[in-house]
Image (cartoon, rainbow, N blue to C red; front, side, top):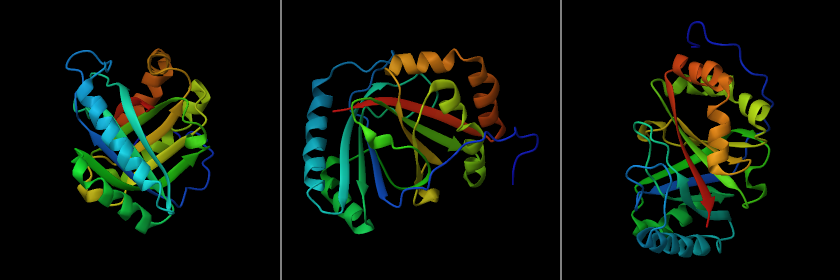
Amino acid sequence: MTPENSPTPDQTSFGEPSTDHFLYAGWCVDPPTRLPFVGRSEQRQRMIERCRDVAATAQRHGAVQTATVYETQMIPPLPDIPRYDVLLLIRARTHEGLVHAEAGMQDLDADFVMPARNTRRIGDTDRTLSATFLFNHFTARRPDVAMEGFDQVAGWFPDKLGVDNTTLLQPVEQTTSPYAFVNYVRVPGSARGFLLTMLTRPSFHTHVRRTLRTYGMTALPLLAKPV
């Protein structure tokens, strides 16, 4: 049921969702304690190398399309934000391929693992890896209506920020995930520039944040680069 007085939906043109299977994982290795910017870390680099070995092995399976390791660049100082400074996203054509990939990362002891399906899509997020990527974790008091809230704000980002892609990852097991969904997006420009441009737009506060509050949702963004 739509909350009362909810805003009029943006006219967002979604493409057909992907039929691929996704696995999103995060590690809290050596995140910053005060500043939002993630500095260099030998401990994190060792974990990245381990993840890259697992990703390379996973991609040898015929059903696995991509397995990409990311190093987080920015963790905004928000309450309850995930502090994953290493991320891994695996995309497979079949469920069996995803199970094979997940089995290969058991020894890495991820802090968070989410098998997911794509339920909203704009453009091609994986068109290039030479970019900064947003992993926006959405919590919701009522996950069953959170998609309505997302639909209300999704068009703002192409319209105001020039974002030409979105791959929404919805957990396969909603009851076991702390997030209603994770939005995976390739953003224009740098992590710092993207956040600054977004936060200085008045309509981000009057439309996007207000709509999310109406639906009892919170957005917890991490910005990362492939490594």
